[in-house]
Image (cartoon, rainbow, N blue to C red; front, side):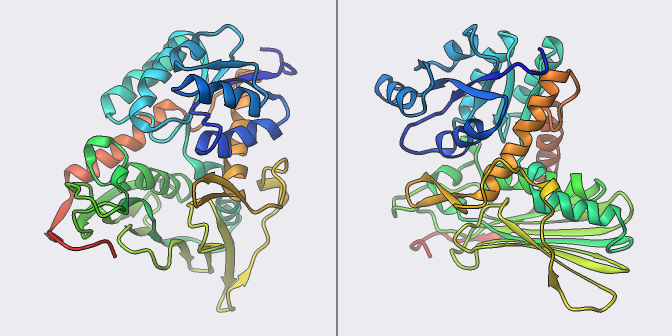
Length: 378
C-alpha cells in the first residue's frame, strides 16, 4: 500500500445508539488522518442503515463476513462481543484484509492460535486491542523507568476494582467474557510489557458475589469475581495484582512502581471513569513527597481533543478521553505498519501469548472454598 493512501475501515459492531464501536472506534477513525470509515455492520438492517447515515459510511451490512469480503474495505475493525470475534476475524483474514480486533481475540486458545497462524500465512497486519499499550500515562512511566527515574525496579503492585462482574455477561465462564479474560488480559499484558516481562506467576481466585445478576435474577456464577496474582519479573522484581469486581465503591486502578531511587504511581483520574486507560501519573525520588507529573504530548494521541474528557458509549456509561487516545495511538501504529510494511505490535500471536498466560495461571490457581450462596447484590 502506498504511504499516502487512505485506509478504508469496515466496522463490525457499529450500533448507531450505543457500544464500544460507535462510541470509541468510530470517533477515533473519524479523527485520525489517513483513515476513513467506509462500511458499518450491525445484525439488523434498520440499525445498519441508521449507522451508515449517522456516521457517513457509504456501505452497510448485516453480516460481518460480507463486510470483510467487500473489495472497498482495507481494514476490518471487530468491536462486537467476544464470542463473535472468531467468525468475523476468520472471514477478514480469508479475504486478505488487515484486522483490528478488540480484546480478547477469541474465547478459546485454540481459535486464537488458528487466527494467529492464518494472519501470518496471509501476510496481513492483525492487531489485538490491548488498550494499555496505547496509554500515554503508561508509556511515559515506562520511559521514565528506562531513563532511571526510580532506579532498579524491585516491586510493581496493582490494585484494580472493576464494575463488570456484577453483570450477567461476566458471571459465567461459558460466555468467554469474565474478570479474568477481559480485565486480567489488559492488566497482566501491561504488567508484562512495561515492566520487564513476567517469568513466574501464581493466582488465587474466589467467587464472592451472590448468585444473582444486576437485575436480581438468578445466575449460576462460576467465574471468579476476585483474583490475586503474584510473581517475579525478568530482572528479579516482585509483583502483586489484586483485581476484584465485588464492590461498587472506590472503583478504578492504582499502580505503584518502586525502585531504589524512587517511585511512580498511576491512579484512575476520576472515580466516575474507572476504565483501565484513564490514568494520571505521580512520582517522587529520594524521599521527596509524591507530586503530579504532566504527560508529555509526544506520548499522547494529539488528534483526540482534551475536551470533552468523556464520551457516551453505553447507557449510563462513558468512555474516557484516555480510552479514545489509547486506541487512537494503536490505530496510528497499525496504519503505519500497513503503509510501510513493518511489523505490528501487539499482534494476534501476542494475543495467544496472553491467553496462554491466563489459561496457565487459571489451571494452577488456588481457589477459595468460600462463596456466597444467597443474597442480593451489594
